[in-house]
Length: 480
Image 1 (cartoon, rainbow, N blue to C red):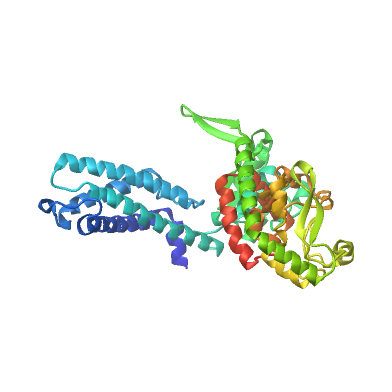
Image 2: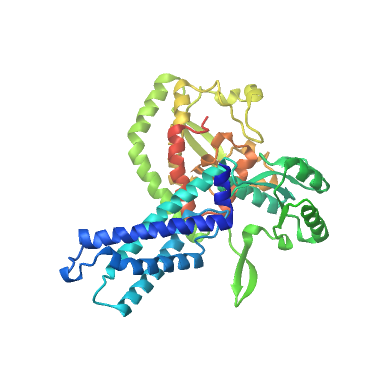
Protein backbone atom coordinates (compact mmCIF):
# COMPACT_ATOMS: atom_id res chain seq x y z
CA UNK A 1 0.00 0.00 0.00
CA UNK A 2 2.85 2.39 0.82
CA UNK A 3 4.23 1.89 -2.68
CA UNK A 4 0.82 2.72 -4.15
CA UNK A 5 0.66 5.88 -2.06
CA UNK A 6 4.06 7.03 -3.31
CA UNK A 7 3.18 6.05 -6.86
CA UNK A 8 -0.05 8.03 -7.06
CA UNK A 9 0.70 11.03 -4.84
CA UNK A 10 4.16 12.05 -6.12
CA UNK A 11 3.89 14.34 -9.15
CA UNK A 12 7.07 13.19 -10.91
CA UNK A 13 6.49 9.47 -10.36
CA UNK A 14 2.82 9.74 -11.37
CA UNK A 15 3.81 11.62 -14.55
CA UNK A 16 6.33 8.91 -15.52
CA UNK A 17 3.92 6.05 -14.81
CA UNK A 18 1.02 7.50 -16.78
CA UNK A 19 3.22 8.50 -19.73
CA UNK A 20 4.48 4.91 -19.96
CA UNK A 21 0.93 3.55 -19.65
CA UNK A 22 -0.26 5.91 -22.40
CA UNK A 23 2.63 4.98 -24.70
CA UNK A 24 1.69 1.31 -24.32
CA UNK A 25 -2.02 1.96 -24.93
CA UNK A 26 -1.41 4.23 -27.93
CA UNK A 27 0.73 1.53 -29.55
CA UNK A 28 -1.95 -1.07 -28.82
CA UNK A 29 -4.40 1.32 -30.50
CA UNK A 30 -2.09 1.42 -33.53
CA UNK A 31 -2.05 -2.39 -33.79
CA UNK A 32 -5.85 -2.59 -33.42
CA UNK A 33 -6.31 0.16 -36.02
CA UNK A 34 -4.14 -1.81 -38.49
CA UNK A 35 -6.24 -4.92 -37.80
CA UNK A 36 -9.50 -3.00 -38.37
CA UNK A 37 -8.22 -1.42 -41.60
CA UNK A 38 -6.39 -4.33 -43.23
CA UNK A 39 -8.01 -7.46 -41.78
CA UNK A 40 -11.60 -6.40 -41.15
CA UNK A 41 -11.52 -3.82 -43.97
CA UNK A 42 -14.50 -1.94 -42.57
CA UNK A 43 -16.29 0.62 -44.77
CA UNK A 44 -13.77 0.35 -47.62
CA UNK A 45 -11.78 -2.53 -49.09
CA UNK A 46 -7.99 -2.30 -49.27
CA UNK A 47 -6.41 -2.13 -52.72
CA UNK A 48 -4.05 -5.17 -52.97
CA UNK A 49 -1.36 -2.84 -54.38
CA UNK A 50 -1.32 -0.92 -51.06
CA UNK A 51 -1.59 -3.89 -48.68
CA UNK A 52 1.35 -2.85 -46.45
CA UNK A 53 2.70 -4.88 -43.52
CA UNK A 54 2.44 -3.29 -40.08
CA UNK A 55 6.18 -2.60 -39.68
CA UNK A 56 5.90 -0.03 -42.52
CA UNK A 57 3.75 2.11 -40.22
CA UNK A 58 6.02 1.86 -37.18
CA UNK A 59 7.83 5.21 -37.78
CA UNK A 60 4.49 6.98 -38.10
CA UNK A 61 3.06 5.21 -35.05
CA UNK A 62 6.12 6.44 -33.13
CA UNK A 63 5.48 9.99 -34.41
CA UNK A 64 1.79 9.65 -33.55
CA UNK A 65 2.67 8.49 -30.03
CA UNK A 66 5.14 11.33 -29.46
CA UNK A 67 2.67 13.94 -30.70
CA UNK A 68 -0.10 12.65 -28.45
CA UNK A 69 2.11 12.60 -25.34
CA UNK A 70 3.29 16.19 -26.00
CA UNK A 71 -0.22 17.49 -26.63
CA UNK A 72 -1.66 15.61 -23.63
CA UNK A 73 0.91 17.30 -21.42
CA UNK A 74 -0.01 20.71 -22.83
CA UNK A 75 -3.67 20.01 -22.00
CA UNK A 76 -2.77 19.15 -18.39
CA UNK A 77 -3.65 15.46 -18.67
CA UNK A 78 -0.64 14.46 -16.56
CA UNK A 79 -1.09 17.08 -13.85
CA UNK A 80 -1.71 15.42 -10.48
CA UNK A 81 -4.76 17.21 -9.11
CA UNK A 82 -6.47 16.74 -5.79
CA UNK A 83 -9.84 17.05 -7.49
CA UNK A 84 -9.90 13.91 -9.63
CA UNK A 85 -12.40 14.37 -12.45
CA UNK A 86 -12.68 11.62 -15.06
CA UNK A 87 -14.67 13.88 -17.40
CA UNK A 88 -11.96 16.59 -17.31
CA UNK A 89 -9.25 14.05 -18.07
CA UNK A 90 -11.19 12.47 -20.93
CA UNK A 91 -11.94 15.92 -22.38
CA UNK A 92 -8.20 16.66 -22.42
CA UNK A 93 -7.51 13.28 -24.01
CA UNK A 94 -10.08 13.87 -26.76
CA UNK A 95 -8.68 17.33 -27.53
CA UNK A 96 -5.10 16.06 -27.56
CA UNK A 97 -5.91 13.02 -29.69
CA UNK A 98 -7.75 15.09 -32.27
CA UNK A 99 -4.80 17.49 -32.56
CA UNK A 100 -2.21 14.70 -32.77
CA UNK A 101 -4.24 12.72 -35.33
CA UNK A 102 -4.65 15.73 -37.64
CA UNK A 103 -0.92 16.57 -37.52
CA UNK A 104 0.02 12.93 -38.23
CA UNK A 105 -2.35 12.70 -41.22
CA UNK A 106 -1.03 15.97 -42.67
CA UNK A 107 2.57 14.76 -42.26
CA UNK A 108 1.80 11.46 -44.02
CA UNK A 109 0.04 13.30 -46.85
CA UNK A 110 3.08 15.50 -47.39
CA UNK A 111 5.48 12.57 -47.13
CA UNK A 112 3.87 10.04 -49.54
CA UNK A 113 0.12 10.44 -50.17
CA UNK A 114 -0.46 7.38 -52.36
CA UNK A 115 1.36 4.73 -50.34
CA UNK A 116 0.05 4.96 -46.75
CA UNK A 117 -3.48 4.65 -45.42
CA UNK A 118 -4.43 7.83 -43.57
CA UNK A 119 -7.73 6.50 -42.24
CA UNK A 120 -5.76 4.02 -40.12
CA UNK A 121 -4.74 6.94 -37.87
CA UNK A 122 -8.35 8.04 -37.49
CA UNK A 123 -9.10 4.51 -36.27
CA UNK A 124 -6.03 4.68 -34.03
CA UNK A 125 -7.18 8.01 -32.56
CA UNK A 126 -10.65 6.71 -31.77
CA UNK A 127 -9.33 3.48 -30.22
CA UNK A 128 -6.70 5.44 -28.25
CA UNK A 129 -9.40 7.68 -26.76
CA UNK A 130 -11.39 4.63 -25.66
CA UNK A 131 -8.38 2.84 -24.15
CA UNK A 132 -7.04 5.93 -22.38
CA UNK A 133 -10.50 6.84 -21.09
CA UNK A 134 -10.80 3.36 -19.56
CA UNK A 135 -7.35 3.71 -18.00
CA UNK A 136 -8.37 7.06 -16.46
CA UNK A 137 -11.56 5.50 -15.13
CA UNK A 138 -9.40 2.95 -13.33
CA UNK A 139 -7.07 5.71 -12.12
CA UNK A 140 -9.90 7.87 -10.73
CA UNK A 141 -11.56 4.89 -9.01
CA UNK A 142 -8.24 3.79 -7.51
CA UNK A 143 -7.37 7.28 -6.24
CA UNK A 144 -10.80 7.77 -4.71
CA UNK A 145 -10.70 4.37 -3.03
CA UNK A 146 -7.21 5.06 -1.67
CA UNK A 147 -8.27 8.41 -0.26
CA UNK A 148 -11.39 6.95 1.34
CA UNK A 149 -9.05 4.49 3.09
CA UNK A 150 -6.80 7.31 4.29
CA UNK A 151 -4.00 6.83 1.74
CA UNK A 152 -2.69 10.08 0.27
CA UNK A 153 -4.93 12.07 2.65
CA UNK A 154 -3.87 15.37 4.19
CA UNK A 155 -4.64 15.93 7.88
CA UNK A 156 -6.03 19.47 7.82
CA UNK A 157 -6.74 22.09 10.48
CA UNK A 158 -8.99 25.08 9.69
CA UNK A 159 -8.37 28.41 11.41
CA UNK A 160 -11.65 30.31 11.64
CA UNK A 161 -15.27 29.22 11.95
CA UNK A 162 -17.17 31.78 9.89
CA UNK A 163 -18.92 31.49 6.54
CA UNK A 164 -15.64 31.00 4.64
CA UNK A 165 -14.65 28.16 6.98
CA UNK A 166 -18.06 26.51 6.57
CA UNK A 167 -17.57 26.69 2.80
CA UNK A 168 -14.36 24.66 3.22
CA UNK A 169 -16.21 22.17 5.44
CA UNK A 170 -19.02 21.84 2.88
CA UNK A 171 -16.54 21.00 0.14
CA UNK A 172 -14.79 18.45 2.39
CA UNK A 173 -18.07 16.70 3.28
CA UNK A 174 -19.40 16.67 -0.29
CA UNK A 175 -16.10 15.55 -1.87
CA UNK A 176 -14.29 12.97 0.30
CA UNK A 177 -12.24 12.00 -2.76
CA UNK A 178 -10.35 15.33 -2.52
CA UNK A 179 -8.29 13.77 0.26
CA UNK A 180 -8.77 16.46 2.93
CA UNK A 181 -9.31 14.99 6.39
CA UNK A 182 -10.34 18.04 8.41
CA UNK A 183 -9.66 17.22 12.05
CA UNK A 184 -11.17 20.38 13.49
CA UNK A 185 -11.01 24.17 13.63
CA UNK A 186 -9.81 27.01 15.82
CA UNK A 187 -11.56 30.32 16.45
CA UNK A 188 -11.21 33.08 19.04
CA UNK A 189 -14.96 33.70 19.15
CA UNK A 190 -16.20 31.86 22.31
CA UNK A 191 -19.42 30.59 20.74
CA UNK A 192 -17.68 29.36 17.57
CA UNK A 193 -14.44 28.04 19.05
CA UNK A 194 -16.26 25.80 21.53
CA UNK A 195 -19.10 24.40 19.36
CA UNK A 196 -18.54 21.46 17.02
CA UNK A 197 -19.91 21.62 13.47
CA UNK A 198 -21.02 18.07 12.75
CA UNK A 199 -17.99 15.76 12.72
CA UNK A 200 -15.63 18.74 12.79
CA UNK A 201 -14.34 19.40 16.31
CA UNK A 202 -13.97 22.83 17.90
CA UNK A 203 -10.40 22.82 19.23
CA UNK A 204 -10.42 26.14 21.05
CA UNK A 205 -8.72 29.46 20.36
CA UNK A 206 -6.15 30.29 17.69
CA UNK A 207 -3.47 30.51 20.40
CA UNK A 208 -3.76 26.70 20.65
CA UNK A 209 -2.34 26.34 17.12
CA UNK A 210 1.18 25.07 18.04
CA UNK A 211 -0.18 22.45 20.46
CA UNK A 212 -2.89 21.27 18.04
CA UNK A 213 -0.35 20.91 15.20
CA UNK A 214 1.79 18.66 17.39
CA UNK A 215 -1.02 16.67 19.02
CA UNK A 216 -3.04 16.06 15.85
CA UNK A 217 -0.02 15.56 13.54
CA UNK A 218 -1.36 18.23 11.16
CA UNK A 219 -0.13 18.26 7.54
CA UNK A 220 -1.81 21.46 6.41
CA UNK A 221 -3.46 24.54 7.91
CA UNK A 222 -6.16 26.45 6.03
CA UNK A 223 -6.63 30.01 7.25
CA UNK A 224 -10.11 31.50 6.75
CA UNK A 225 -9.92 34.58 8.96
CA UNK A 226 -11.37 37.91 7.72
CA UNK A 227 -9.03 40.20 5.78
CA UNK A 228 -8.68 42.76 8.57
CA UNK A 229 -6.79 40.20 10.70
CA UNK A 230 -3.74 40.31 8.43
CA UNK A 231 -1.26 40.55 11.32
CA UNK A 232 -2.87 37.55 12.99
CA UNK A 233 -2.71 35.68 9.68
CA UNK A 234 1.01 36.44 9.27
CA UNK A 235 1.62 35.16 12.80
CA UNK A 236 -0.22 31.92 11.94
CA UNK A 237 1.85 31.53 8.77
CA UNK A 238 5.07 31.93 10.76
CA UNK A 239 3.97 29.29 13.29
CA UNK A 240 3.19 26.86 10.48
CA UNK A 241 6.58 27.52 8.87
CA UNK A 242 8.39 26.81 12.15
CA UNK A 243 6.52 23.51 12.52
CA UNK A 244 7.13 22.46 8.90
CA UNK A 245 3.41 22.53 8.11
CA UNK A 246 1.98 23.81 4.85
CA UNK A 247 -0.31 26.83 5.29
CA UNK A 248 -2.81 28.21 2.80
CA UNK A 249 -5.06 31.26 2.99
CA UNK A 250 -8.61 31.41 1.66
CA UNK A 251 -9.21 35.07 0.68
CA UNK A 252 -12.15 36.72 2.40
CA UNK A 253 -12.19 39.94 0.40
CA UNK A 254 -14.40 42.39 2.24
CA UNK A 255 -16.02 39.33 3.82
CA UNK A 256 -17.59 38.47 0.46
CA UNK A 257 -18.93 34.94 0.23
CA UNK A 258 -16.61 32.69 -1.71
CA UNK A 259 -19.61 31.30 -3.57
CA UNK A 260 -20.36 34.84 -4.85
CA UNK A 261 -16.85 35.44 -6.20
CA UNK A 262 -16.05 35.12 -9.88
CA UNK A 263 -12.44 35.49 -11.06
CA UNK A 264 -11.65 36.15 -14.70
CA UNK A 265 -8.73 37.49 -16.66
CA UNK A 266 -8.83 40.67 -18.73
CA UNK A 267 -5.71 41.03 -20.89
CA UNK A 268 -3.61 39.31 -18.25
CA UNK A 269 -5.14 41.32 -15.39
CA UNK A 270 -7.06 39.22 -12.80
CA UNK A 271 -10.47 40.68 -11.96
CA UNK A 272 -12.79 39.64 -9.13
CA UNK A 273 -16.53 40.11 -9.52
CA UNK A 274 -19.79 38.87 -8.07
CA UNK A 275 -21.73 36.09 -9.73
CA UNK A 276 -25.21 34.73 -9.22
CA UNK A 277 -25.32 31.62 -7.04
CA UNK A 278 -27.91 28.94 -6.62
CA UNK A 279 -30.40 28.00 -9.30
CA UNK A 280 -31.08 30.85 -11.73
CA UNK A 281 -34.01 31.46 -14.08
CA UNK A 282 -33.03 29.06 -16.87
CA UNK A 283 -31.83 26.52 -14.33
CA UNK A 284 -35.14 26.69 -12.49
CA UNK A 285 -37.02 26.15 -15.76
CA UNK A 286 -34.90 23.11 -16.65
CA UNK A 287 -35.16 21.66 -13.15
CA UNK A 288 -38.93 22.19 -12.98
CA UNK A 289 -39.45 20.66 -16.43
CA UNK A 290 -37.53 17.55 -15.42
CA UNK A 291 -39.53 17.36 -12.16
CA UNK A 292 -42.87 17.44 -13.99
CA UNK A 293 -41.91 14.92 -16.68
CA UNK A 294 -40.16 12.41 -14.40
CA UNK A 295 -42.69 12.56 -11.54
CA UNK A 296 -45.57 12.06 -14.00
CA UNK A 297 -43.92 9.03 -15.61
CA UNK A 298 -42.94 7.47 -12.26
CA UNK A 299 -46.45 8.00 -10.83
CA UNK A 300 -47.98 6.21 -13.83
CA UNK A 301 -45.40 3.40 -13.72
CA UNK A 302 -45.70 2.79 -9.97
CA UNK A 303 -49.46 3.28 -9.67
CA UNK A 304 -50.15 -0.51 -9.45
CA UNK A 305 -47.53 -0.89 -6.71
CA UNK A 306 -48.88 2.14 -4.86
CA UNK A 307 -52.39 0.68 -5.02
CA UNK A 308 -51.13 -2.63 -3.62
CA UNK A 309 -49.21 -0.87 -0.81
CA UNK A 310 -52.31 1.17 0.09
CA UNK A 311 -54.35 -2.05 0.39
CA UNK A 312 -51.68 -3.71 2.56
CA UNK A 313 -51.55 -0.68 4.90
CA UNK A 314 -55.31 -0.75 5.30
CA UNK A 315 -55.32 -4.48 6.07
CA UNK A 316 -52.43 -4.40 8.54
CA UNK A 317 -53.47 -1.65 10.97
CA UNK A 318 -56.31 0.79 11.57
CA UNK A 319 -55.90 4.37 10.38
CA UNK A 320 -55.56 6.31 7.13
CA UNK A 321 -53.45 5.08 4.22
CA UNK A 322 -51.68 8.40 3.80
CA UNK A 323 -49.80 10.32 6.45
CA UNK A 324 -50.16 14.09 6.04
CA UNK A 325 -47.79 16.49 7.75
CA UNK A 326 -47.07 20.21 7.52
CA UNK A 327 -43.57 20.86 6.25
CA UNK A 328 -41.47 23.93 5.43
CA UNK A 329 -40.68 24.46 1.77
CA UNK A 330 -38.86 27.02 -0.33
CA UNK A 331 -38.29 30.36 1.44
CA UNK A 332 -40.17 29.13 4.49
CA UNK A 333 -43.47 28.49 2.71
CA UNK A 334 -45.59 25.82 4.43
CA UNK A 335 -47.12 22.90 2.50
CA UNK A 336 -48.71 19.53 3.22
CA UNK A 337 -46.40 16.56 2.61
CA UNK A 338 -47.87 13.16 1.76
CA UNK A 339 -46.38 9.78 2.67
CA UNK A 340 -47.67 6.26 3.04
CA UNK A 341 -48.38 5.72 6.73
CA UNK A 342 -45.57 3.60 8.13
CA UNK A 343 -46.39 4.03 11.84
CA UNK A 344 -49.29 3.23 14.08
CA UNK A 345 -52.13 5.75 14.19
CA UNK A 346 -51.40 8.64 16.54
CA UNK A 347 -47.61 8.21 16.34
CA UNK A 348 -47.00 11.97 16.54
CA UNK A 349 -48.68 12.12 19.95
CA UNK A 350 -46.12 9.59 21.26
CA UNK A 351 -43.11 11.64 20.16
CA UNK A 352 -42.64 13.44 23.49
CA UNK A 353 -42.71 10.13 25.35
CA UNK A 354 -39.87 8.79 23.18
CA UNK A 355 -37.65 11.87 23.37
CA UNK A 356 -35.06 9.98 25.43
CA UNK A 357 -34.59 7.48 22.57
CA UNK A 358 -33.79 10.16 19.97
CA UNK A 359 -30.55 9.21 18.16
CA UNK A 360 -30.25 12.35 16.03
CA UNK A 361 -28.57 15.61 16.97
CA UNK A 362 -29.76 19.19 16.54
CA UNK A 363 -33.41 19.71 15.66
CA UNK A 364 -33.87 16.25 14.10
CA UNK A 365 -35.78 13.37 15.67
CA UNK A 366 -34.82 9.86 14.57
CA UNK A 367 -34.92 6.44 16.25
CA UNK A 368 -33.28 3.53 14.44
CA UNK A 369 -35.66 0.91 15.85
CA UNK A 370 -38.68 3.16 16.29
CA UNK A 371 -41.35 1.24 18.28
CA UNK A 372 -44.09 3.16 16.48
CA UNK A 373 -43.27 1.53 13.13
CA UNK A 374 -45.60 -1.18 11.83
CA UNK A 375 -44.13 -4.37 10.34
CA UNK A 376 -45.05 -3.16 6.86
CA UNK A 377 -43.73 0.30 7.76
CA UNK A 378 -40.23 -1.05 8.50
CA UNK A 379 -40.13 -2.66 5.09
CA UNK A 380 -41.44 0.48 3.37
CA UNK A 381 -38.93 2.70 5.17
CA UNK A 382 -36.04 0.46 4.20
CA UNK A 383 -36.93 0.66 0.48
CA UNK A 384 -38.23 4.27 0.71
CA UNK A 385 -41.61 3.11 -0.65
CA UNK A 386 -43.38 5.25 1.96
CA UNK A 387 -42.12 8.34 0.09
CA UNK A 388 -43.75 7.54 -3.28
CA UNK A 389 -46.81 9.79 -2.62
CA UNK A 390 -44.39 12.73 -2.45
CA UNK A 391 -44.25 12.53 -6.23
CA UNK A 392 -47.59 14.34 -6.05
CA UNK A 393 -45.85 17.09 -4.05
CA UNK A 394 -43.23 17.27 -6.79
CA UNK A 395 -45.89 17.46 -9.50
CA UNK A 396 -47.70 20.15 -7.51
CA UNK A 397 -44.55 22.28 -7.26
CA UNK A 398 -44.15 22.05 -3.47
CA UNK A 399 -41.08 19.84 -3.84
CA UNK A 400 -38.45 18.86 -6.39
CA UNK A 401 -36.97 15.47 -7.23
CA UNK A 402 -33.64 16.63 -5.78
CA UNK A 403 -33.04 19.05 -2.94
CA UNK A 404 -32.80 19.26 0.86
CA UNK A 405 -35.26 17.13 2.81
CA UNK A 406 -38.29 19.20 3.93
CA UNK A 407 -38.18 20.00 7.67
CA UNK A 408 -41.15 20.41 10.01
CA UNK A 409 -41.76 23.90 11.47
CA UNK A 410 -40.59 22.84 14.95
CA UNK A 411 -37.20 21.89 13.49
CA UNK A 412 -36.80 25.21 11.65
CA UNK A 413 -37.41 27.09 14.90
CA UNK A 414 -34.21 25.48 16.25
CA UNK A 415 -32.09 26.38 13.20
CA UNK A 416 -28.98 28.49 13.58
CA UNK A 417 -28.85 31.39 11.15
CA UNK A 418 -26.53 29.61 8.72
CA UNK A 419 -28.80 26.52 8.68
CA UNK A 420 -31.60 28.60 7.11
CA UNK A 421 -29.79 28.72 3.77
CA UNK A 422 -31.03 25.20 3.08
CA UNK A 423 -34.52 26.72 2.70
CA UNK A 424 -33.49 28.79 -0.34
CA UNK A 425 -34.71 26.13 -2.81
CA UNK A 426 -37.58 23.66 -2.98
CA UNK A 427 -37.05 20.54 -0.85
CA UNK A 428 -36.48 17.25 -2.62
CA UNK A 429 -37.32 13.55 -2.58
CA UNK A 430 -33.60 12.83 -2.54
CA UNK A 431 -30.54 14.98 -2.25
CA UNK A 432 -26.81 15.20 -1.75
CA UNK A 433 -27.10 14.41 1.96
CA UNK A 434 -29.24 11.33 1.22
CA UNK A 435 -26.57 9.84 -1.07
CA UNK A 436 -23.71 10.89 1.24
CA UNK A 437 -24.78 9.12 4.40
CA UNK A 438 -28.52 9.59 4.87
CA UNK A 439 -29.50 9.03 8.54
CA UNK A 440 -25.88 8.44 9.62
CA UNK A 441 -25.02 12.14 9.17
CA UNK A 442 -25.28 14.74 11.88
CA UNK A 443 -27.64 17.64 11.22
CA UNK A 444 -24.76 20.09 10.74
CA UNK A 445 -23.24 17.79 8.10
CA UNK A 446 -26.62 17.50 6.39
CA UNK A 447 -26.92 21.29 6.32
CA UNK A 448 -23.39 21.65 4.95
CA UNK A 449 -24.18 19.25 2.11
CA UNK A 450 -27.52 20.93 1.33
CA UNK A 451 -25.89 24.37 1.11
CA UNK A 452 -23.09 22.94 -1.04
CA UNK A 453 -25.77 21.59 -3.40
CA UNK A 454 -27.47 25.00 -3.60
CA UNK A 455 -24.19 26.77 -4.37
CA UNK A 456 -22.98 24.21 -6.92
CA UNK A 457 -26.19 23.10 -8.61
CA UNK A 458 -26.00 21.85 -12.18
CA UNK A 459 -27.91 19.30 -14.29
CA UNK A 460 -24.80 17.08 -14.08
CA UNK A 461 -24.89 17.17 -10.26
CA UNK A 462 -28.60 16.28 -10.29
CA UNK A 463 -27.90 13.35 -12.62
CA UNK A 464 -25.08 12.14 -10.36
CA UNK A 465 -27.34 12.28 -7.29
CA UNK A 466 -30.16 10.42 -9.07
CA UNK A 467 -27.77 7.66 -10.18
CA UNK A 468 -26.33 7.34 -6.66
CA UNK A 469 -29.83 7.25 -5.15
CA UNK A 470 -30.83 4.04 -6.95
CA UNK A 471 -28.38 1.63 -5.21
CA UNK A 472 -28.91 3.34 -1.85
CA UNK A 473 -32.68 2.83 -2.12
CA UNK A 474 -32.26 -0.80 -3.19
CA UNK A 475 -29.86 -1.63 -0.36
CA UNK A 476 -31.50 0.69 2.18
CA UNK A 477 -28.22 2.37 3.19
CA UNK A 478 -28.80 4.58 6.22
CA UNK A 479 -32.60 4.37 5.95
CA UNK A 480 -34.71 4.21 9.09
